[in-house]
Image 1 (cartoon, rainbow, N blue to C red):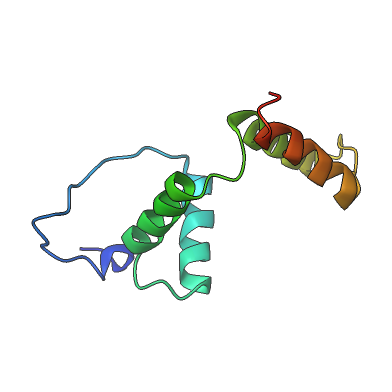
Image 2 (image 1 turned 180 degrees about the vertical axis):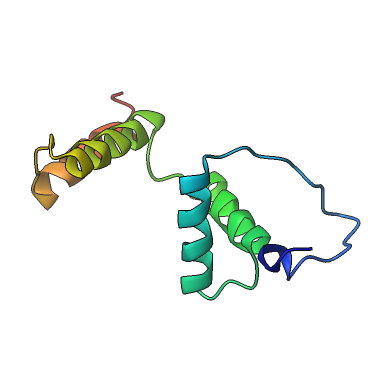
Amino acid sequence: MSDADAGATDDPDMTTITVKVPQAFLDDLDATWRAEDFPSRSEFIRWALRDAVKHPTFSRKGWKDIAASEHQLATGEGQTYSSEEIRARLNEDTDGNE
């Protein structure tokens, strides 16, 4: 067992799943759960999935827009937006105007 799964239990109600992610993303994920004081990687992933399912804030298009913006900023190709512009775009997505 790795330190990433230190909080794991043998709970019969739990089912194990396998998810493949790029190593760079896993590194970010590990840094995040440790920085946020989660007891394990698994607990952090359960929290993130529970939050995404029970409280979806963004549409798929909204997430794609965020990812594209992050890429553009990281590569220097990006354009910046005001918080008002971002809120307006996100509100359009949550209103079903994808």
